[in-house]
Image (cartoon, rainbow, N blue to C red):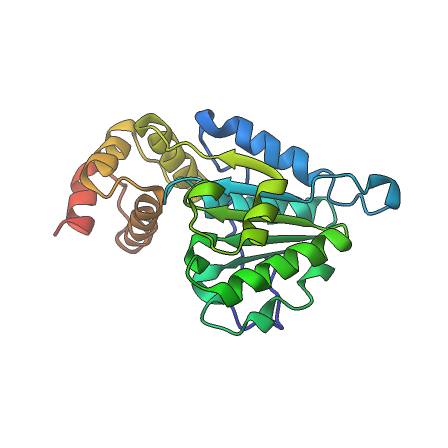
Amino acid sequence: MKKVSQLTLSVQLPDDETFASFQSESNQLVVQQLQHYLEHISESAPEHNKKVHSLYLFGLMGVGKSHLLHASCVYADTLGATSLCLSFSELTQLSVDVLEGLENIDLVCLDDIQLIAGNIEWQQAVFDLYNRMIEQNKCLIITGDQSVAELKITLPDLVSRLSWGLTEQLKPLTDKEKSFALQYRAQQRGLFISDDVASFLINRLSRDMTSLLAALEQLDQASIREQRRITIPFVKDILFN
């Protein structure tokens, strides 16, 4: 895992959030577009100055935007590039000065830009960072919960910049995709979850993947502690009692 020590932020990447673990057939074209975009990350010579410098990724909460930002950083690492992933949920608690110097990083990912819709100081700081990233021929991926036109960003220049690059929309996962994703992530932990257990979790818990994966973490710990398989009775004992 990569960590940037000079920032007092939670910038440690999850081990299991990669492109491979993003199990959504309906969003595979988005994954492919991200990979294609990142494959040009090291193109810093003048002859490549026409490359696309930014990608805006949007979708509802829980569709996997943060996962794909983390996966993009992992992928950048395999390409020998430096990367950093930050969330506006933390950034807005700090001074805008935290963005200074980030243009020296090959890939910068900024999550949940809708959180600065009412903050003109942060909007100006992101606009300035965007310009510096372009000048240095670096890559920028930004996520939001709505399209650029619906973000309620009030700085026209930033709206313009967000519209310059590629734009991709993530579709909500189907129940089948959520089940497959749960089972895949469980398998990565050395666990087995049957179709019935996965379906039970999806139907009884909040249906977003963040909540489902938090439940999987809880079940994993309980399974280790009690040396029991993850069955529906076990799930009921741990999560609903």
